[in-house]
Amino acid sequence: MRAGLVAISTAALAFGAPASAAVLIDFNNVSTNENVLFGSSTNVPSTSIVAATNQSNTAVTFTNALGLLANASGQSSTALASGVLTGTTSVLIANGFTFDAASFNLQGIPGNSLPEATSVFVEALNGSNVIGSTTLALGGSGENRIRIVGNAGEVFTGFRITLNPTGGGVDSLSQVRLGGVSALAVVPEPASWAMMLGGFGLLGASMRRRQRTRVTYA
Image (cartoon, one colour):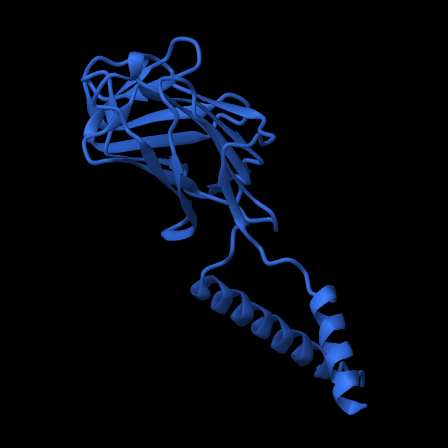
């Protein structure tokens, strides 16, 4: 009888437990409300180029050790000077900001020409931490629209893509969109907390001294 009750209780706990949190990285749609746009096109490769969201004007930095070019026409895109995007590219929002959803397109090389990437390793970032990652197979010369979103309120500071095999690439990284861009709440530094507490202590001591003061008249 007791064993049966334990089994029933265990089952009830299992059914009542919330689903585990997860970061979803796949080819499904996600709601976003800001485009990430380059202010102007560039013709000199740089390992780091800066764009901005079109609603909150929040800076977003693209980095690739091989050097990137920005294409500001239409839906902003970036690739290497060779015209193909290879290697590892990071996309990071400005310090002090986060977002709760992202989507982007990895445009395949027209005509399935070499050096075409066959897969991409995607990492979702929060600060220096990787909070979700997966490898996705890329499909031919068409679009590969990828989303990043959490199912339990996760927020992100960026994402990183690595194209495989080594040397393989895509035509460009384009149509980057973010959702839920917001500034982080400012948390006082320990020294600031100490100063605040010290100030409260002095104020309390001063009030106590005033309460003890008595005025007498002859």
